[in-house]
Length: 472
Image (cartoon, rainbow, N blue to C red; front, side, top):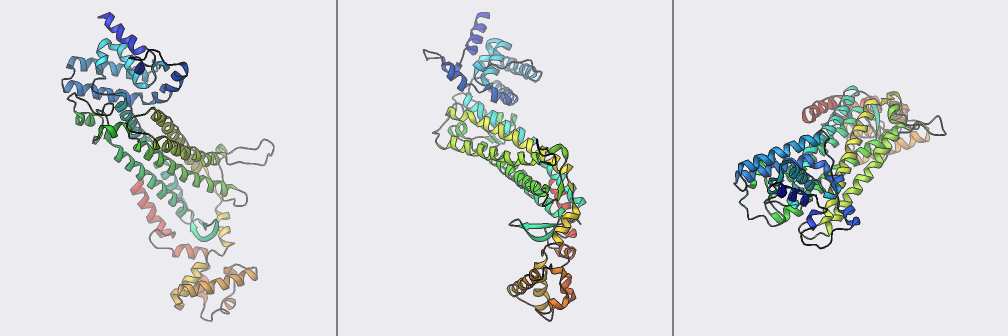
């Protein structure tokens, strides 16, 4: 019996075990290097062991292996999991991937019985099952990162419902808004990211285990049972599609890419706001750096790195799409790189989310500068035009045209709209009164935006309540 066990172990320990059955020559050193993925896919060891335990229990339930063999395999896998968690294990590059490493450890742990675990499955369905499970498991952590940033922004919004700042279009001062209104815009943006993440997980939540290499299996397996054990909604329908499908990885990576874009936009605004010409914020020292030769500098490196990092994630999305675009059914080794791409992007996004959360938590807002920048603009011009429509029954286009003339007049006089005298306004229309002049007030402008989703303190406070209930 000992000789048989040693034979199995030796077989498992051979280099490139998937190629040693009929090939006369072993792989070259270069092929070994390019073929090995254990440095990357060892991150899926928990999922691989969990999937193998479920598969063993199903084999036992279906009497494909004995209950004694099932128990021996499951116990051996649990010991291996415990050893890996305690860092007592060294993964071997010559065994290619996490699947063969775990199988080799199982042979060493329980002997020849380990050879029965791979009955009715292939590495093709095994890897895609592990990969889906990894994305599902780690999406929970990703959602927590997103939620934490939302909570930070909501807390800022609570404190700044009355803080006035300029709202921009085309990076030109457009209309007065509150800082709370601004923060809540990003809360909604991140909310959509969380919803997309949930939808992504809902779609991928089908179990590929049991698809085999591409055609299913002749063994009487129960795929509904393994789906239940692994918390999948149901088994995948077509074995050929199951092992070749990486749509779920593309969709997950798209979600990550869009998160990176949102973080990049947020970072870009922080960079602008920290610029001396804006001076809206003071950055926390911990997320800024100095210059090697200019002692006065405070560089927004944290935000700049988040902005730049978006390019890596977007590039990874493109890389995965290009890998997939020319692949015939079913599995090809090109797909080995999918995990490296996903893991890298996931790590980048989690780090960027942490940086941005810390950034917002430590920012000091120069609220007086924000308010002054609105006062030094004609951001309330639209409010005046709206007054003409509401009180003098102008069409909006007529009101727009008249207001434009008044703005041009103010510019010529080197004044802002709120600095114009009533008699100056009445040169354009005698019915303009002091009530119309009140529309040039920045506070009046913000307070009047009471429509659902508007920037008035009243509307913003309702939006905060809504955001807390929906997202937190």
